[in-house]
Each structure stands twice: as structure tokens, then as C-alpha cells.
Image: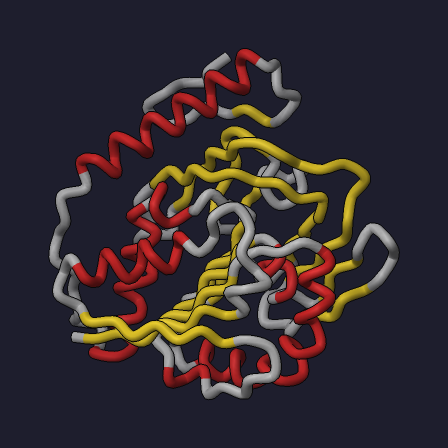
Length: 266
């Protein structure tokens, strides 16, 4: 088996180790004997995104978002929409996540148009939302999973009525620090504010993207061979405990809900 992976704007949209998500995808494929090809796509390049099975776009600051905005909307938007409707898997982080929506309004009052792929919009708030995030998600076939990551954004993202969140926040801010939701899911698209990188910290999410990509290419009967994720699970649990302890020590004024298996942490 083989999968083709596209990395969008790798030189401009790459905050807080977001490139590690591509490494995680390729390595977890490699360990299973799945061959991968990785193609970087930058400004001005017209691409048939349907030729890719997985598409990744990292985060960037307002400066980088402005640089790619017109290109993302006018040059790549339609092709990206076609790929998503064709079943391609897509992961977008922070600034990339924001630009998948209808628009992002910056703190300076500039409105950056998005590609409208996701039913959401974002506006800059007055304070930055920084710190560790722990959330629960039922994306994986309804099974409750935990997500751990790091957020640093001032954008307040609000989901439309047709959009499902990726998860429910246990600790941290998430989309806007108000409704307790983190990220968004549409078809095989995942948008999230979680940096750090999110996929190495949450191997189940890596595998969800891979299996959806395989199902698109080879049919719904495609399965993933199991991996020994003992180290990954231990690191995941340690990261959750550390995030909880930091929030408790610093009396972080953020939402804290019960974390499965770890209690409230306060």
C-alpha cells in the first residue's frame, strides 16, 4: 500500500513544531510497510489536491496568514474543496484551521477571507489563550479518547450549526474559551488549535487520518496493523499529568473538567 501526503506552505505555516505532524504520519506508515510520498506545496503553485490522500497545513501568525491568504483562497481553494469532497484526509492547525473557515478578522481589523470549507468564523480577541490543552473526543468511532496539545492564539473561533467540534475541553481554552469546544470536524477534515506537535502526542489521531486515507484509496475494508504504542501512551499520560499539575500550581484561570482516569486535578 502507498499514500501520497501534501504539506501546504511548509516554510510559512510552521509554528511550534507543526512539521512534526508530517513526520508522525510518515513514520507510522513506514512502520507498517505503507509507502509514502511527501510533496511540499507553496505560494503560486496550482495543485490537483485529489492526487493526495492526506493534506496537512500548519499554523502561522497574522503576518504569514496575510501572505498566503489570496493564494490559499484564489489559487488553491476550489481544488482543496474538490479533494475533501473526494474523501481526502486533511489536518489544519491554528492559523491553517482559521483560514478553512469563512474569514478571520485580525486584531488590526483586517478581514482575511478563508476558503469556506468549514462552517466557522474567527475574530481576534483582546487576550491570548496560551497553555496546555486536554480534551476528550469521540472522533474515533465513538470511543472516548483524550487529546493533549499546546495552544497559543488570540483568535476566537465559533462553529456554525453544521459543524461538529473535534473535542470537549477538560483543561484549557479551546476554540474560544467560552463554549468548551476544541477544533472542528467535517468529512475527513480535522481543524484544531493544538500545536506541539499534536499527532506525536496523540497517535490515535494519526491513525484515524491514515485509515481514512487508506479507505479512500483502497476501500472501506482497509485496516491498520497494530503498533506497539507503549512509549507513546506513557508520554501521552505524562503530558496530561504535567498539564494538570501546571494548571494547579499556577492557578490557571481556565476551564478545568474531569479528565478521564485522572480526576479533576484541582
